[in-house]
Image (cartoon, rainbow, N blue to C red; front, side, top):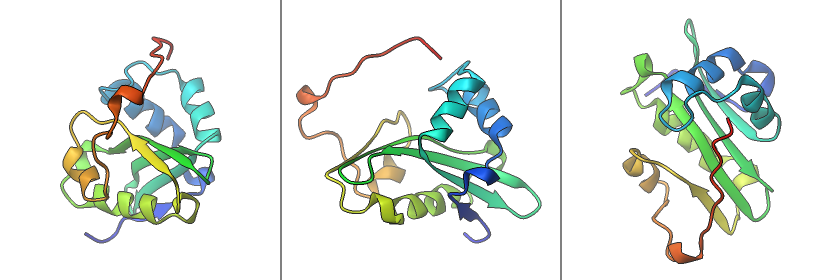
Length: 139
């Protein structure tokens, strides 16, 4: 499980790669507009995962006020680099980040990675009846 370098420097992000994956390789954001991805990067705490010789292979962003609330979104490792512990390394960096300490609530949504997130303390909402959402088809 070595070799992945995690950075929160937005200047290092491979925005075309992130957009390509989110718009064509992710079940949760098919067709998302490049402008939307760029706006989300600008307003989020971003984590890029990089390998020597391969460039960026992993990504996650957190929407947060850095005091009380955070939402983890769009976590991915490129398919060719999965199964090597990179998602764990990425999540280790996310949960250890100084801006994400002492929050009252840290949320995410997932269809298929419950095991990964459970190891960091994420559980199903205790009171899902209190949660509401607006779902838009806008990309």
